[in-house]
Image 1 (cartoon, rainbow, N blue to C red):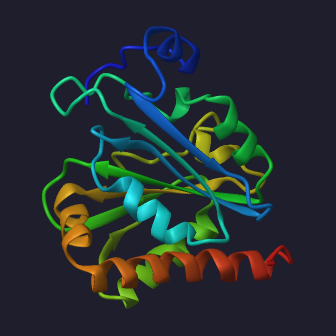
Image 2 (image 1 turned 45 degrees about the vertical axis):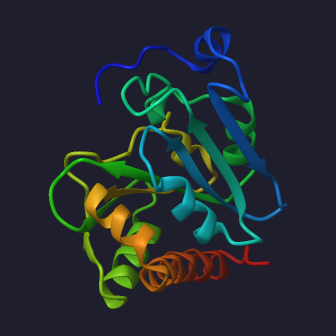
Image 3 (image 1 turned 135 degrees about the vertical axis):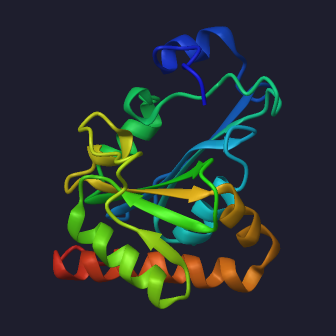
Length: 199
């Protein structure tokens, strides 16, 4: 992914039309965890679907989708610059956050980053137990800056960088998508229980 065309969401919004060029789904379910897919649609295909499955019907959920086309795909905003108001509200009102991204490295695996190391390790361990290849820490895409949308939750967050090959596998296999989602959800739920924040 090259340099972002916009410095922040205000610039993106001024040059594009919601409902035509992009869409936003923001669900505040009064839950202490939020799941993000800020590069959905034509940017990192498959990430929105994974985020929805992890969120289920109870976790807070935020999905931004770019509909400008896979060639143009100009609405990518780096996570550290992603300041869309509804996303910021969901992040800052949650105990913990998790963001689903796609990455272009070869292979069939997920890189686990973010500032919340405890939850990151739990997510990685659960994914490995479920039969997925997971790497932590995520050296190339660490996702540890405080300005990253996923780290604006009270306890910071976890950034999942999923290879395109694995995203395609999850799209084609409902069984694998279910295993992946359950593994991640279970780690989040256990973390919240430890913090006394589970619902």
